[in-house]
Image 1 (tube, rainbow, N blue to C red):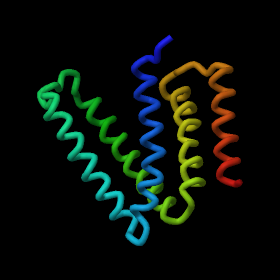
Image 2: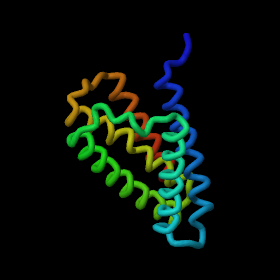
Image 3: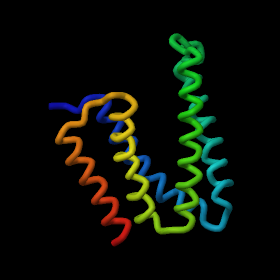
Image 4: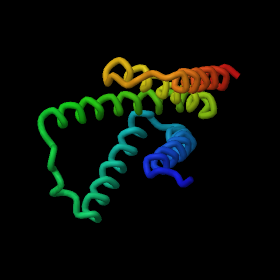
Length: 142
């Protein structure tokens, strides 16, 4: 049984997030963490613009309405705040402890998906989430 495309991208996301912790930790050593986040953000914007250009997707705005724009802006604000906290935490603490605490975002995402999106909470989800929380706490305190 092959992996579904969303699973491939999700694993890619996890790998690159792990790599982000290590590269970010080295990158913010000796500089202001907010400057580090700014540099990272500029690179992300340039990279995304290059992808849109390469794939000729600048004109693909179907479905883009005020509702979508508002929630994308709110998501960007949440991302920015997350990155600010993450880079400061990396500057102050070891990546091997910061990254697991950051992964508590899994538990927050599940809780918020249930409360705000009406997603169903199954026993598998509860048990998996509990493992993530316990694992994060054990790694952060260990």
